[in-house]
Image 1: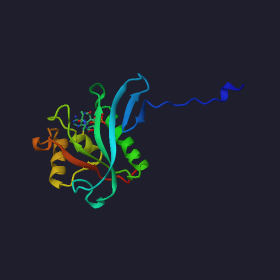
Image 2: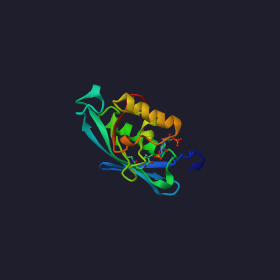
Image 3: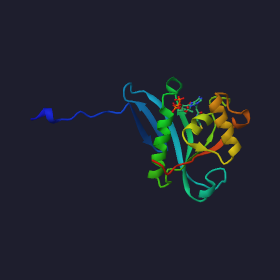
Image 4: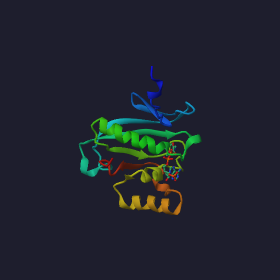
Length: 158
Ligand SMILES: CC(C)(COP(=O)(O)OP(=O)(O)OC[C@H]1O[C@@H](n2cnc3c(N)ncnc32)[C@H](O)[C@@H]1OP(=O)(O)O)[C@@H](O)C(=O)NCCC(=O)NCCS
């Protein structure tokens, strides 16, 4: 038996496990769950999302949550990347859409997070307002906090 020829495998820091519409992300170091994303393939039939792709499929992000103890460590972005691949696998070409809204703290919405991850809205003024808030590190305008339709712009890129 030549044990020396066995190559070590590199285990990623995080693993995602999908069951039904829910994909949960775990730390392989601690075994703890870090968050989850719930998605559903939907036909785009609403000009708030992908105005040039009406009638096409897109993966709708029903819920996305990263648990508070592990926020701002790239977990949410990893779930978005995962969802983009899932969208491809499900025949939606990488399209993703959502209503940006924080069910926990409506005053602290995820617009900046989605924008940084390549999401847009159909309204240039709204995009500008979010970009301004990112640039100047100020809160999102209160009128957007009740929910903003957003979708992944360059969904065809790797
Ligand atoms: C929104 C949420 C999913 C982000 O998850 P996360 O793992 O913390 O996000 P990431 O670490 O991948 O963030 C990537 C980038 O997005 C931006 N970002 C994320 N959260 C932000 C915040 N609260 N304020 C400003 N920018 C933020 C930052 O640019 C960040 O990069 P940086 O940390 O290097 O500055 C998480 O805060 C959350 O679960 N919030 C409560 C539930 C919620 O609002 N869900 C969305 C429902 S539509």
